[in-house]
Length: 449
Image 1 (tube, one colour):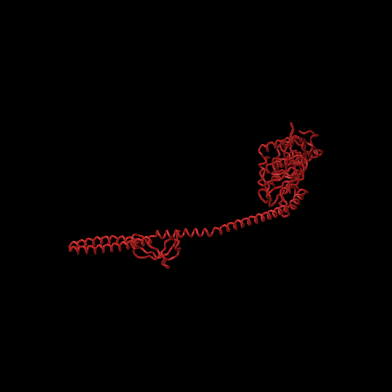
Image 2 (cartoon, one colour):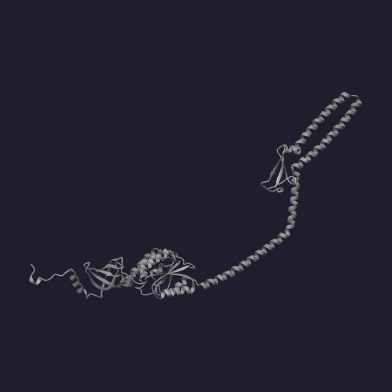
């Protein structure tokens, strides 16, 4: 049984929670040093993690609004000094340290981690010059990844449009400082590559301390630059240390103004170069045309000088060729053979007649009519056979005989001229073909010379 002094009204759970909160009220604006472990981001942008030392561990929480104001986001294994307050979450029955500010406890250790990241990336060849992408000579559009407010974006736009007034610019707003900056930059780089609205990317901010520039020393941003298909130019302000983003980028500039001049040429300079090249091309074209005209005139003069002799030479060759063709023509050869046969026939007939007369006189003188008659008959029969043989040869060599052996004579249907070469007719002309038996009318379909 409870003693009388113990007989008091019990606390409700809510009353006890409120009492605990009242007791914890003095624990505000506390500084806690410890190592981060179990860092997780919630769907609404809040972060939950634990802070520990060698003996104890306490749950911690960063609201999304505070996380966006932080210069850096804590990562597992890093030691920080956290500023915040202790709060009791009654609905969960847990005690949490609500963080609103984070400071590096050991800059030297952070730099050592950064140097280790640089060594890993360098071993992969991420800093090699041959890996760097070439900047376009004249981009159609430039993508600016920077804070949408402040002097940086103004300087970039002013420099680009001063150099090239109608250059296209597309702005991808990003956080350049705070815990959410690395993810904001990485997402903007991926989006820019997916949309392909620009030909080159300028990643810029206005400088700052080592802690403020920490987002550009993270592996997340470095990997996003390395994965980019578009060339990336960094313009992160005047800093004594080159960031990892500078090392993996395709070109590095100290200021936004320098970056604008690097990615966009002066339009006036380009126009001047075009005009100079146009004048040079016109001069070279005129010179080449004049040289070609002189060369053609020289060839024309030489041709005019050699043309008469060339024509005479060709005429002589054609005359000789025509004469040779006429001599070798079957028709000419047949005509010559016919004339020779007719001459021989006259000689044979004259000789036979003379011999017959002489033989007749001799026989008459000798009064040997029988012998004369027989001799005359034999001589006449021999002469007849010889004449028949020569007649057969004459027939064989005559035009009709040549045609009977398969040859033909082709004549132009209009002029009647004998066609001795393909050059004497043309496609579409009408011709008559004389054969061994009969004639054929035809039309020339094709001529091969």
